[in-house]
Picture 1 (cartoon, one colour):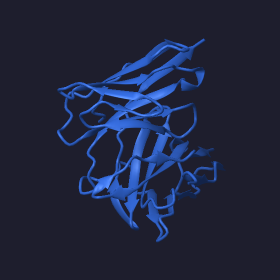
Picture 2: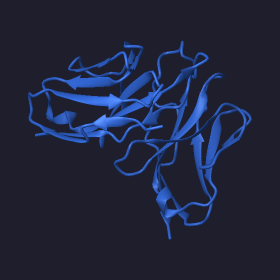
Picture 3: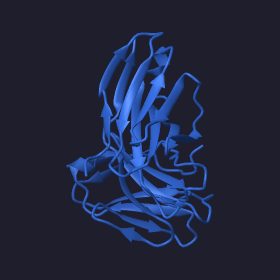
Picture 4: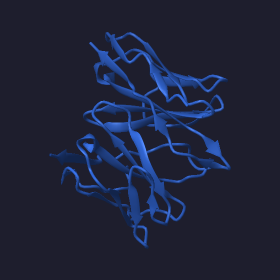
Length: 114
Length: 115
């Protein structure tokens, strides 16, 4: 079972920031939070990941709460091309854990509107 | 670097047949994972290979199998195809460094239709 809870869908106006929330209240101390997105019928695309600290890259920012029970993915200036399903995933990082498996939930369907 | 490539991109088979799908990981990536995506079940993990060994397997029947070659390329096989096997099959590769898995990069998938 997926260890995350996300809203089923969200809308965002083009040019505005898109803030996608994720709850992961049972996250363990060594588990990372990963975000992927999937544009229709394509393979999922890695966006960003983090453990404790906030992270930023060229695509997005990831804000993780201090208790690590929730996080928010921020797309600072959403474009129509950001319309996709966004998946929040928690997983242990180490090779000695149970393999390199990502458990996908239902994700959030983000619709960016003109 | 070239991304993850999967062949073929589209495939049509009939019930009872078998199929083999191929995945070439990003150069230097030794971990290859396979996923099945259907409208009803979403994205589900099939199995993962590292250094030609299956390290983890999802909850799929034995008709689903895979292997990895010494060059890290991987194949998955589905025997005795059923209508419910129609899906997008995705391959992902990742590097392993310092005892940690890096992020997985996905290929475009193979769209399998079983008639």
